[in-house]
Amino acid sequence: MSKYEKSCLIRGDGGRAIRGILDRIGDKWTLLVVATLDGPPLRFSELQTRIPGISQRMLTRTVRNLERDGLVSRTVYAEVPPRVEYELTATGRTLIEPAVALAEWAVDHNPEIEQNQSAYDARSE
Image 1 (spheres, rainbow, N blue to C red):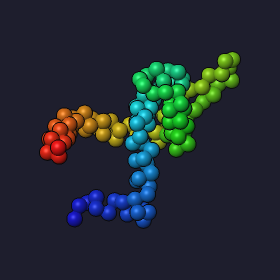
Image 2: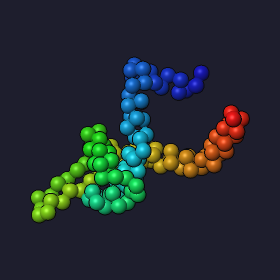
Image 3: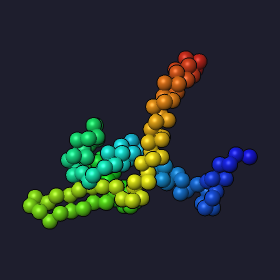
Image 4: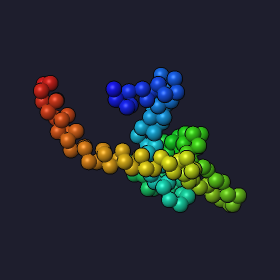
């Protein structure tokens, strides 16, 4: 028996917690936002500049979801014009190590995966 066989049943929720978290962090932008915030606080425009291809709408949506989850904090400064900064919370920082490990795994294995996909597709034609 695998040591992970019952991991989805640990909390007795049939895997809902795991699926919910993976749905959140496994989307197109979340891990990029988290990785970009690994450092000093950033303003929205700085964050958007550092993540090529993300729209203002998607960045807004992503940071709001991360803030709701308690992974990102948003600080508003009473200045004119108002200044808003985003940074990882203590919980958000704990996501960096597994995210980097997953990213490294993806980079290391992507050539093999692409070869396997091509071979599979060639057999399926």
